[in-house]
Length: 186
Image (cartoon, rainbow, N blue to C red):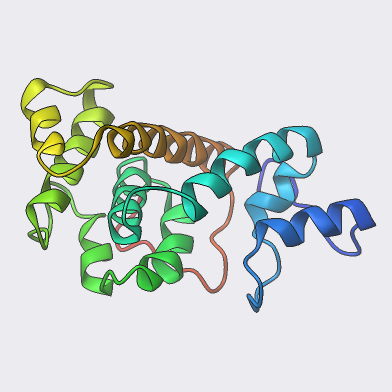
């Protein structure tokens, strides 16, 4: 049972419109539990929407790179909720295989990354998770594949999904019924 119950329909017209903004058009699922909990504080939800939507819909990182980072951050944070949502939807849309996504939840490096850029991203996520810093070798490996704006976005993306992991884990959110099951116990 979550620590704060998600809103349930019927929603007020304002909340209904806001929740529709959070979900992509044509999605067959009701708004995510996370979004419905966040709308217990509509002003906070609105502020969070701007950054989250910007990272997902208007980012400079290739979609597969973005989803690889999100999967690794949420896996390292033990956030089965967010990992499962992305694994079931956005990671596949970005072209990552189920095997690649599952490997992000494995201890250590898991499956060999498909390219050097992905390997650099995974190492950098692990280093940020473990130390909240990036060593010169990790930074140099990223710099070999990404431009300054993409590197800034990577750091914000990793931090944002660490925040989302804290939120989902702290709330004890149950996984969405359609989400990909987390391959190992968080």
